[in-house]
Image 1 (cartoon, protein in one colour):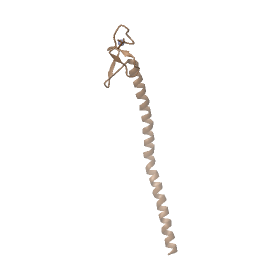
Image 2 (cartoon, rainbow, N blue to C red; image 1 turned 45 degrees about the vertical axis):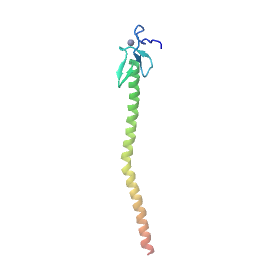
Image 3 (spheres, rainbow, N blue to C red; image 1 turned 90 degrees about the vertical axis):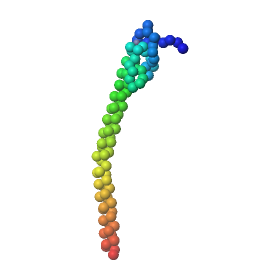
Length: 97
Ligand SMILES: [Zn+2]
């Protein structure tokens, strides 16, 4: 196994690699976050990814809200529809009998 050196400090041996960029990093360059090592670029990349996911979450929430808001209306229309059919059947029965 070859000894690897920090990508930012060629004179310092790396203690690990960034889980995002896969670059070797020394203790000073590594940021331990949620149990894994990140380089500065890796952490920035992670934030970008999280921001994207949050953005997606926001639109999902909007879509869910729209569906929730729409559900009672659909149910009401369905109710009206069945009421109409039911009334029509009752009227038909009344006329024939
Ligand atoms: Zn370093």
